[in-house]
Image (cartoon, helix red, strand yellow):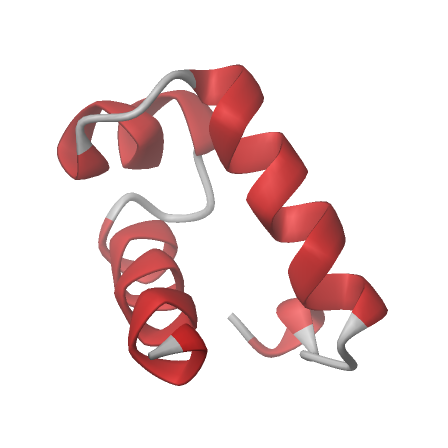
Length: 51
């Protein structure tokens, strides 16, 4: 389940060229919520620089 969420977030960031504001709008969440999710992804070892 967590992997699917992470994949959706990464796909949104890629399609929005790394813009957290645009990606959060696309995902239907607040930018602050996206930042928290990204922090959790980093803690879990997801490489966010490979976008």
